[in-house]
Length: 185
Image (cartoon, rainbow, N blue to C red; front, side, top):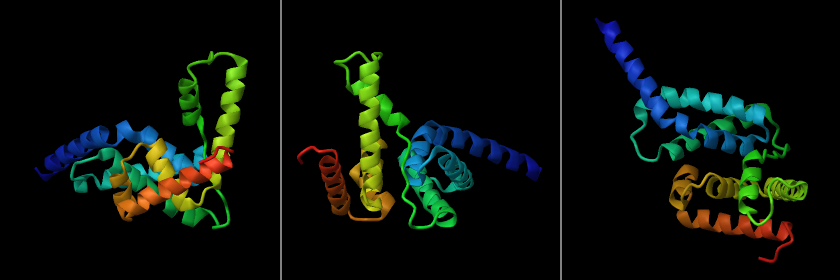
């Protein structure tokens, strides 16, 4: 029966989707938040990206599943932005995930103290504003490397630029961040 083969293929595709895509949904949402500027829009983008990933599961050839999914999310984000936002709108991402990192990195102070919480929120807000103020190409490279942890080579492949361009964009982005945050480069 031809229907049985389709059911097996659907089950296999669903299982592969669970293995390849689901472990990386938090990273996908984080990237989409940075690119779209807010959680609600990011959720829409990730949902669209998941549909595209599911439809393209047969074309996934293995390798770094996270980078594959983030490439789909990036493309879905830019498609969504082109449909829903004028070019003059500047996106500011959520930093809920960076607040956790800031608290972990600040091991010398009591993370439960009101002072530590206030300092972390102020630092996070300043970092969020500085990242949002970066030109798009620098912000994108910085988020993919320093927040999503992709390698330089993965970023170069994802963005379709030479490895040296990725390194240059990251250096410029980090330099701009340091100068905006009042730290000498």
